[in-house]
Length: 218
Image 1 (cartoon, rainbow, N blue to C red):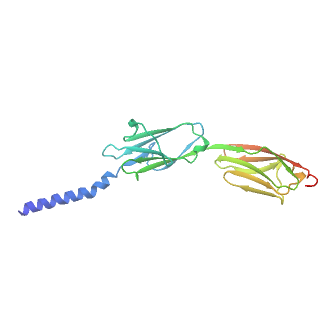
Image 2: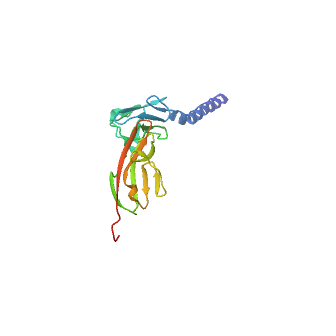
Image 3: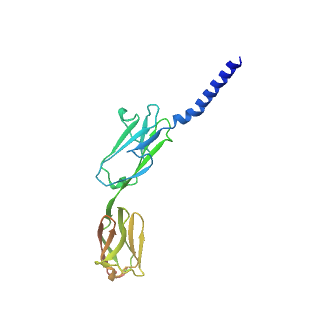
């Protein structure tokens, strides 16, 4: 009787250990993307195509995988879901910079790995080429800029460095480089150049300002 009781206790202990250990076994799978097991940044350029392959490591059964682009689910074909799954990012553009792709384990989505696209490109400049203003009015020359890495910005006037005066004000954000001129004078007439200097390339955009004499009676 004592031996039966002892054997029953041993089996109960074994089952208890299995129950305690089972969650660990079920969640021990590790994901990798292109051989990397940690989140990483993928350097790329506009026009290129990148392939991201997610694979399950240490799995004890077939695992279904999910892909997300930012918060949106990526549609995968049925043969591209189990244990390994690939997505192709084609036609990469400047707008894809900073986009995150995440691979997740379907049954436990806390198991995941992410790749962030770092799309490097030279400065892209845009804005209103020609502006006409009357003497005494306020003018804003807005140079829209897009660049990765971020460019160093400066204003030139008539091919020389702009000498900032009291009625000049410069404002810069990650999206634009703005020159404000309050109460413009005839001497403000000319061509203003927005210059973006990045590690990749230097780009220039010209803004032509025509200052007209104040109309009589204005």
